[in-house]
Length: 427
Image 1 (cartoon, helix red, strand yellow):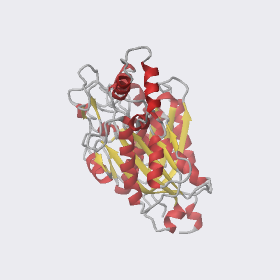
Image 2: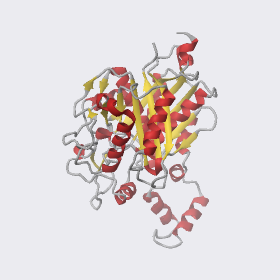
Image 3: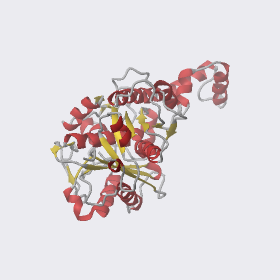
């Protein structure tokens, strides 16, 4: 391969993926996840982690098989650590990673159980007006490690940096449902700008608890189809009623293609381009005209040096919320026009639910596996298509298809829109 082949259309280093790791409700590791995803298996189930009798939504895609305390900060670290360990092993990187770390993590809050414990220790009832001051006074008297790990936003990144020997100050970010894609973008930029030959990008979210369910329910964002959990997430259908909250983690090792080939690493795919645009329409709703999402998709294609004919598969954001699915279709149809009916589309969230902060990275891994295997995962529960959404949604059963390029969408609350374009390794 010539030196020129290591560069993109703008003369920037091509970015190779050399390691991937993943945890979702479908299992731990790429093999288990891919087998379940392509077989149309759902990881969504009734919640057993905490009482749900009084909740409107009683289902989720929780990860219940990890040996970790059921505290959001600890779960988020456990998912991130397992995914990173798998990605590092696949990339054949032993010892210190020797590159920067970018971590997408959920906004953290202390669990109520921890707050009650500290209030009790302070001799105060949680409902008393001075309970908060009592909790702070208790924390000053002696260390409470589990509380601190839950309360500090950067704790997951700090622990990963210590474990895997990343270089420099680890970056922790939160851009809502686009976070996982944003972490990847930061890694791509670090390599393109010549600041490093490799970057570790991780996204994780273990924040399913009663409080998060209540908050999303107040926004009318969650599905309430509790009787058959595995059928609740049904993107692009007429009877969709909201997303299913879920957990997971994903890690990708990014390297310049030249560096990867130089050390004999196996190249799993190329991060060819990205786009990211803000949407100031509403704190939770996307602009109904799709303008910001359209601009994000167009920016990703332009960054990758492709036009609307250059994408062979779309991994949709596909949340199963009535408004967001409609907006995504409008955006895709505007950008791809007459080409859209010829591009297979699927939503991983129909099986794993919405992993929130982790979603962009989880779905990037599934997109790269689609390229590698020529297998397009299905969108399950696609029994009653929305007639207003005219796309080639891969229905219920996987499809064999030669995929050389993927657009993966992430459109999040608060106006966070991010898209990734991934391709096969150049010949």
